[in-house]
Image 1: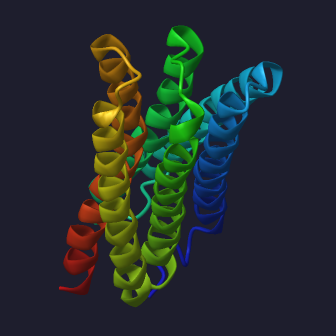
Image 2 (image 1 turned 180 degrees about the vertical axis):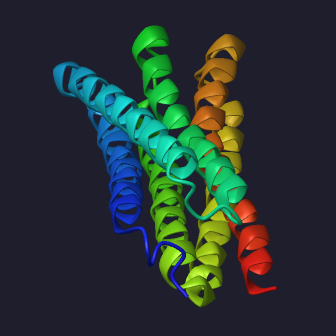
Length: 214
């Protein structure tokens, strides 16, 4: 049973919100690639883009929240939807903040670690993508939610493993100072945290889906 079956306008806004979050994940991934390849102008352009997408997501979230209250829509699920919006917004915020940290602190990432950083980023973006699919399913086909949350958990676990492998490689390096190692570890943690935020959303979806089935 579709949650928004009688509220088409709200459904369209939610789809637009999720499109924005998903696109932000792609922008983040491209930003990391440009940074590692020293394409400074392209990297900074990705930061401008992700800021725009974050603002768009914030505006859409407010519109959806307003509709939920002023039009007294889905009152039995309103609290769950509001919490879901806020938790999902944290994902795009984390992605933006991570790119900003790269821009501000400009960590020197040795070529030997590039592949592992990209590997970590890939798992993170997959987790975000599956998260958005899980949310869409929650509103349109609740029985399919678990198929997608399972994949969120999978990619979050893979991101954890990739992050740990990267950090071990960093601290095993004999060419880096301790300060450089700690700096790089910090950025591995920030990238990995995006997948953690996606996992938070999946956790909420699991609970909310059970509530809807009761």
